[in-house]
Amino acid sequence: MLAPYACQPDQSRGRLHSESMSSFRSPFQRDRDRIIHSSAFRRLKHKTQVFVEHEGDYYRTRLTHSIEVAQVARTISGVLGLNTDLAEAIALAHDLGHTPFGHTGEDALAALMAPYGGFDHNAQALRIVTRLERHYADFDGLNLTWESLEGIAKHNGPVTGANADAKHAGPLPYALAEVNAEWDLELSTHASAEAQVAAIADDVAYSHHDLHDGLRSGLFDEADLMQLPVTGPAFEEVDRLYPGLDPMRRRHEALRRVFGRMVEDVIAVAQGRLEAAQPQSVEEIRNMGLTIIRFSKPLYQELKAIRSFLFTRMYRAPSVVVMRTEVTQVVNGLFPLFMADTSLLPAEWRHDIEAVQSQTELARIVADYVAGMTDRFALQEGARLLG
Image 1 (cartoon, rainbow, N blue to C red):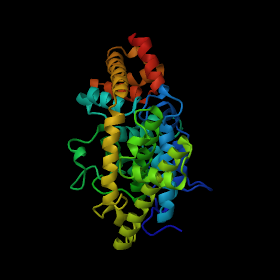
Image 2: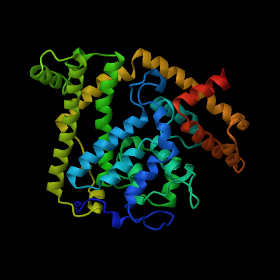
Image 3: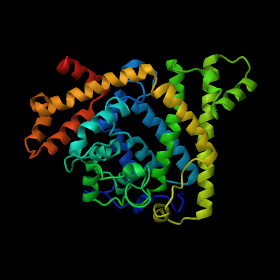
Image 4: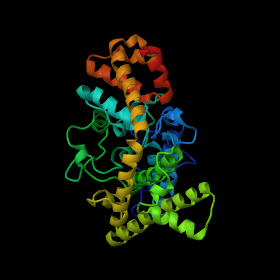
């Protein structure tokens, strides 16, 4: 039984290319399955979350991160009476557009693409699911439902209009503009509650696992976390309940309490807001003018302190900065090399280039190719082509 404000599968706005309904899967289940079986999803297993993929076997990659986000999204959606299949589909797709080397690779590619319309990983995810996946006989992309495309485009909030975040100022990323021109995603409104759940699940997942990976890397230790809000009380509770616990079990017990605190807070806030607003349709959620799925203000402030700590001690740690510099050089070297000599591209990519009529069109194809690389392939190509 879905809540009245949930996305109902039988009321989906459909797909850009008409298809017959599945006899045993809802439209949103079908979207989820297509995302899981896509080439772009498989490549996430060798793409950076924080640490470059080859730096350790236990660190999260974009793939394991996406799976964790999907798990959180299903849990929250189920409690709130939302469509768990749609929330899971958006969660699994939200990072499909990431470059090799995570945000470092994205920053480098965005600078290189600035003269050609820029680069944004959310917009690139849309480009992948509407154009670049080419496995079906009847269409390019995955032919996802409108609701899934909307969720990928707007899960972090409106992209245009009065309610848009300041970071969206300026022209739309070309990949998003192209999709929106073909099928209006109503970029000035909020997304469905399911998409909002996928966005908060992303925050929950990385806030939890970056602490875990940072501890494993040795960039900080448990004593550091005991000085912070949320994590400090979690370790204190474990020490009180399990004095002398094995260090690895102590770490896990504390961080799973941090994880639970975040999920429970999101659910409580959402239940309160939904009870107060009494929305009777997904359209009311979209036009509410505010995010209905979010952290409470006290927890949000505490998490800001943790993120500030992670930024200093992990994301900008000297060893991480060194690796960021090295992988930036790889992206900065490969992109202009392919722009200057397209014969270095694989045959299927050279076929697309035959039809280009401008440097902008060429740059976008080269960006698609570079963005699709895994960490290891980008490093291999860098070594082979750049020396």
